[in-house]
Image (tube, rainbow, N blue to C red; front, side):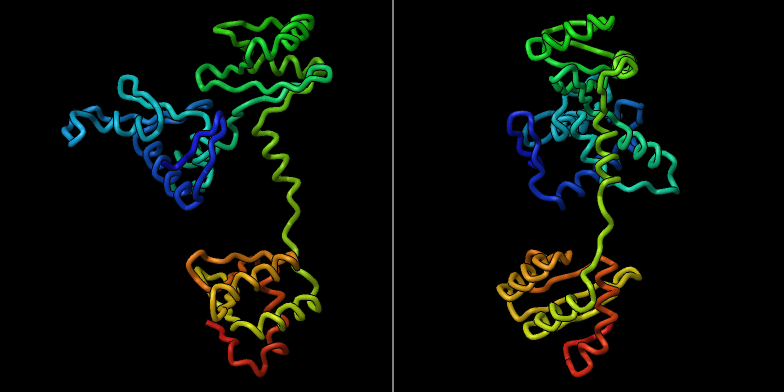
Length: 286
């Protein structure tokens, strides 16, 4: 399976599989589905088909793959599956793709509410845009907001609030933050990538050049640096050396080479290459 379920935590085992799965589900949603502000639905054909496991249908197989049961001819994606679709980039040629991407990035998922000294996480339900928390866990929360004039529903042991009620709480001075807002704040706080100063980079590359060949290659019009080592052990040592110097680099799992894609670092390496590799056979520009 793509995901392992540990309690309520879903863990992605392999990024490559994650992206492939994301693209497959996104294709289904774009081809035979529709997007609402708080839900993504795939419409399927329920024509019966015979398999070795017995009689089934494409809809049932898809629902099983997505961990959902099928109702009539539609399958609604679970909240955490919608986050798996985020690697799918918008294609301007298809307005539906942009609509899907906007829905994903603006999907609230959950809300953090702080009442007094206590912090509560209210999970969002795709049906009706409501947020909920367990009654036992949120009893103090229930009493506090009731005193503020907010009257939530209680159903099946859950305290349920609408988005409007949460925004009303916010207007009354209660800290309310939706997860998609927290994600956007976190992205804004990420500092742009920076490369080490040229003198430090020169010393590092001199050491790397003693152990491996350095190649500047081009892929899809963009340059990147390949450090080709004689064996995987050396490649691991070089990768550790680069990371210690805070140089962003990756090592393909089955290859004995290191790759640097970060543009600032690649350009810095290009600046020092003429003087660093003027007598080195390993310098190749492709």
